[in-house]
Image (tube, rainbow, N blue to C red; front, side, top):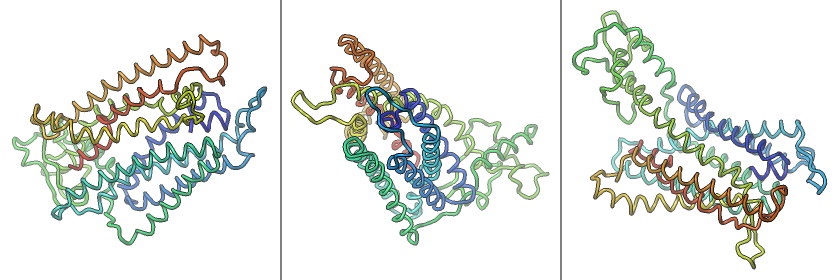
Length: 432
């Protein structure tokens, strides 16, 4: 996308990068809203349907901006380069907002909706769910590699109309296929807004801040029927952390009929405790993704200014955006090597069935990320030195005589870091 913004819409590098990071940030926030809608009233099925349609509208809008000359500036000439007008940018922003909103409906629901199709009360389903996750993330890897090679090549060498039209058509086909399978799906009833449940626990705990907690946690409030829709895979057990929240589950004579703003079950209290325990991990993950965000913007622009030929005799030039495939392949193959080779070795040393704990795994990922960022800085220093030696510092369109393969190590290192930090491992761990 950074290529489209800088080479087709003629946006300055900083403005294009800001646009992409704002888009990525919005796409990271909207899944919270999508999850809220799905859990509150719509359910995962309808949230996916509506999100997919909105996403498709965004894709169509972006494709039209590439096809219609009135929606993009004229190509740059040697003496003049016209930036996209305000109207053209507003159309782009509207398309990106639509895709962000669509992402909010798709991303938080697809994996969980697919996992819902497997009834955990039946024997042998746990292994099938594990196989599902493996196939899901494998398919995602194949799709990503295809997009970063075939589709990117079409965008650079055939045209952006085709390059954006093919993913748009593929998305339309996937929406139709999903709808056609509707009679076969297992659609679970929404369990209610998790944010409301969390707020109810806080309010109930505050109202009973002066109540005396029982000596045994077995005397706290439990209601299997009340928690039925939110504990399909089992109820959470009481823990001793954040014990001030246990006040929400204290039974007093004035409670009367269950009112969730006055009394909460142990399961609901433990939900909030789990969220609080996860917050530091979530906050640390921000640093990981912030460090790797430049791979989709600045590094691609670096590649444009470098020698992209495979060899001195080759005429084929590597599309800059295709460099991302190095990271994808590293992560995909690294996950297999980690599970098949590293975990058994670590298991012998630590005695832990997973080799090392999730927090230790994330710590290793952070260390590798630091090294990857340092390598990125060193490569940029070398690129600028090469440009200075050849008098190209003031020639942004010139090709610096330095190989694009200097960018590969940072993609590899970020890919290895993703092996330890990947969402795949976290999702599988949670379901196990």
